[in-house]
Length: 129
Image (tube, rainbow, N blue to C red):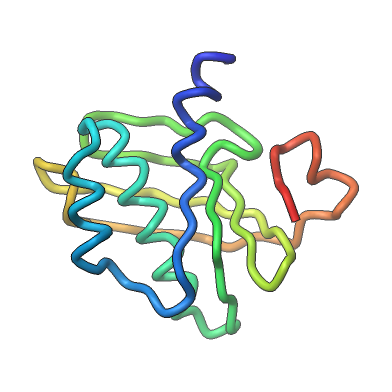
């Protein structure tokens, strides 16, 4: 678990508020190993999709491992225990993401937003204000 948390530290992706996948982000992703690239790319996609959601969320961080370890394969990640931060609050998130061969393009992405996470649970799940 400790090794997993160290490798997943990179999963805590933050996006500038106006972002989509820009050239700088693509260049940064291309420098990563394929597994880290998959995780980062899917986290970025989660934030972009949630930002467009009808509930007016503005996510600035996603943690794929907050409540449970994600299940990963070479080109897919499934997280039932993810969380995202929006307007200073954390929300439960589940998502399934599949990418192409170089893990740069999203092939399929499905997500479900859950309830707000009570503040008294933030510390035990690596959720920072």
